[in-house]
Length: 413
Ligand code: AMP
Image (cartoon, rainbow, N blue to C red; front, side, top):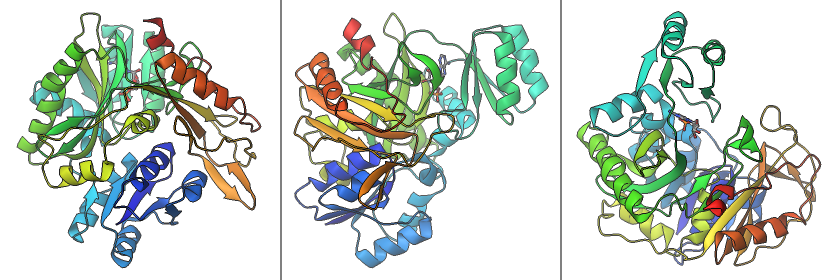
């Protein structure tokens, strides 16, 4: 079987690696891929991005299954284009991907279907938004309506900060109450009617240790997330995931694909939805896929055939933890072209998934903000973390930045 993965990040490297292990898979093409997917034994990069080029490639090569990594092609309708051409592809349609592509759509959807989330108001007018914030007071959260690669949300600690965010983000804005608690990532596979939960995870969005500094795409993640106890898990499925899948079907936009609920879990264990993403998280995918023992192609095929209801995924009982190594200047202005050295050979319990990397002659060089995600398994989180940081000691590139404290919340418990 020949597969195609769309995307270029660490998540896509992990997907390509995992899919290539499935016994029926001969080859995984990655469009456009990165330095890591170029080096995977059964993978090959293809320099394509536009939906019509991808469809033509899949037809010509006889690709039997395509998996989409990032949100942008989903929101642009790549799944619709493949389906129209009679090609199998795993991901939500453009209509269903609005759950991530428009915060206003997501909030209205959650209200309509009784899914717990922060109270909100949507504004098209900056002056009205400012007046509302002045009255409501801080802390308060200001969100741009559209896709913003993690940069469209400001948790304002003062009215002045919120006003500044309203001016800077502009356009349609969602303003919502600030929720307290602990965050977790809850990702499922959906077949339009049923959901199969993947292992839980937690990521670290801030650039610096102690959750300080600017927001990023994610500086590290681990699985499982201890805050999601079996009781919380059952509540999330019952109160958030199942109503979301049923609601999308009821609204005429059935959801197929990975669905990611970003959760805030309060001290009493009540989960509320911060956001939906229409894809696997990056970097959450890296530790999650390290722990997946089931055949991923089989699970995706079940989802595409509407047979997820009694599916089960088998997980490695060990914990996994991934640390992101980012480029100089990330997240504002990442520098490209720094030579990367010392990446250890893949081992059963430690792999380096690549993201912003590119092969240049004989060298591997940085080409994006998040460069590598060093991901390790261990009998517990502490062991996984030691193994990941030990591997990092051998890796070098100029301006390399990473957090020393990935997993700190879980290790405090
Ligand atoms: P989002 O893209 O909506 O998940 O927002 C990005 C980050 O902003 C989240 O991971 C949270 O850390 C924070 N955030 C978003 N909404 C809220 C909220 N209502 N209350 C507190 N923090 C929030």
